[in-house]
Image 1: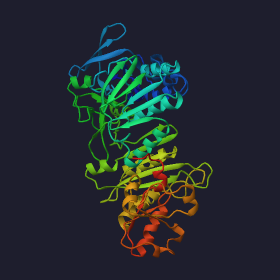
Image 2 (image 1 turned 90 degrees about the vertical axis):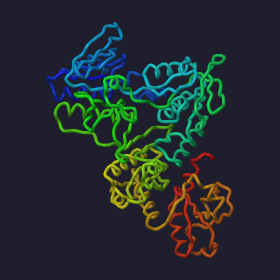
Image 3 (image 1 turned 180 degrees about the vertical axis):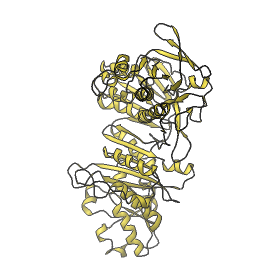
Length: 559
């Protein structure tokens, strides 16, 4: 069998190596349009930031062997052809025309089975100036190397980053944390990371960026770029910003599908190649894997594009297994993601509440502020989390977390729960390990499930932490923290009326609370305020409480 793979990426090489392992007599050839073979694209931001000192680390195995064509021939038994660009696919003749980018020679390759792994390409805005020197996307090794060298030589002092998604946030950290450069982040929507975070954690991320010295401009759509006096100029939302040495365009990537589309392959609504669960395209004997292909979302059933190496690698393995005659498939995905932002971990899975509503669910939220292990353990760190659920079925729809590295563990656990269709009641049976250095007696997911069930079944309702000012202006606010807490951290917002009654004294002082008032209860992290709602209900008083407590609010910048 002749197996041809187009693209020496994570997906393409995983497919090629797996197929050769399963079919020892197969002739496996991989074409790569660039000079770089099997480079770890997800590591580029960390090379730029200096966390990874040597770029060669992104080109080697865990055993320090460089992944060259010679390595793949000797160790994997496959032929890798760098600098060979596929130009035309003929699905009837089962051939691919290509050009050797070094010699200019035209080449032809026959295949019995073909895997397209052409990846993605950066989204570039249709505005003047995108082709100016110093304006660059950030998806290729040469871009990362050039930026790192310019930073090391002191050629950059002020940087504009356009796009507040994953790559944009990683670029902000890279330039700000190690190099100490002035960084201005422009995002056309009203929050950063809006595709994965709701309003509350989006506000927390904005606060984190600003505390780290990042100049953040939300609802600033890029309108143009210009060069002036040796510097770059950015125009966004009708305003002009001057003095930039570099402008990074980090608006995401779109699937690279020209080869497949011109051959007649079906392209889906995400712009990716349509594949089934076994990675077949609409063309016979042609598969597609990685960032060039779209997949199905597990909750919505709709087409989904997720450019992520972990997913691409799994897709490559499935394609190889199917070609080798095995029964394998890729199930629908949930969009589980995580990233490092300065010293903070951000992670999410599933749907945000607003997306859930758009998809026809009755999406509701609960918020929580936690310690990532027993609160008395010396190394305990903060963790903020949000749970999204369907109020009709009680099914878990999404989760978001921010704080220590435990945020990733929480989200990975939630991912399995969502995939298994767990409801809030079933979440209570989750059985994690416990010891004070590693966890709290009850996991944050337990607390969030309990809070959601309290909303559904007991009418113990929380209001969003970002709405504190609105409730402080229109409600009687009761601060149930202890006196020592209030002395250390006074109530942070102006109130129409504020009562301070510690939770431990609430039953004894219930007569101090007037009837007929709209009451909002507040504590440090949420549970005491929620329990106070129950106490007031015992006495015929209706109230709501602040989800996540003041610990959540303290991380948010003023609106």
